[in-house]
Length: 318
Image 1 (spheres, rainbow, N blue to C red):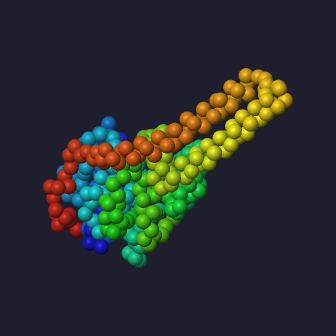
Image 2: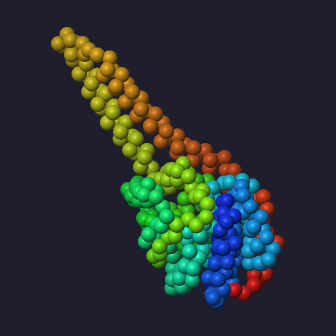
């Protein structure tokens, strides 16, 4: 490996960027190959991009991509993957929860011949019980809902080979779930274990709604089981409804007694209506994904970047 790319998505991380840059350089300076650090500013509303720009003016190894607005964490990483020049790339978040000091360990394991080495969390410090429970539930649901084996308690912190990078660039879907896409590829993968630190500065950019959206993208990207579940549920409800119709006709025609009460009618109507709305919602989520890919808008728009201003040979030796 002659060049390593470090891909760092940034969204409102002005407090952590300078420390992150220092720790990255400290971890990478002992390596025997060149490196580039690509900061992707995902439409930050603070001084994040100004700080990145200042660092880039002093360090030629720093590249930046300033997106025109906030496109989302997974798309920001995709922008870095599209523009990185390394023989391998490390994906690491900019909030300092994933320690840059682990990069040499990732690289050493990678040099044993793996295409992917991902960092698996032993502990998740500084996270609420709710966050830990929902994360655990997410991975359990993914394991049941999809046919691919996505490792539990694994985020995007990992090193990937040029082979994997090129494969990711061939996947044009708009709703990205990169750790699922990488797991789907197969290739030779392994894990290293670490304790994830708590967030040092500011608040997480991943709100509950964004986590729900990511979970929805993950499930609908790699499974059609929700459609199968809704279909089976529809058959069950239809069968029960048919049986109730037969029973009602029997009571009215054979015994001469009509079933009394509006409660049962209202309950059954609301139940069937709820099932229909649920089914429409599930189908709509799949149709929405299809529509996004058919429209084929660019995945992201770049406001400014310094990547095309320099060549690979311009990167100084680590």
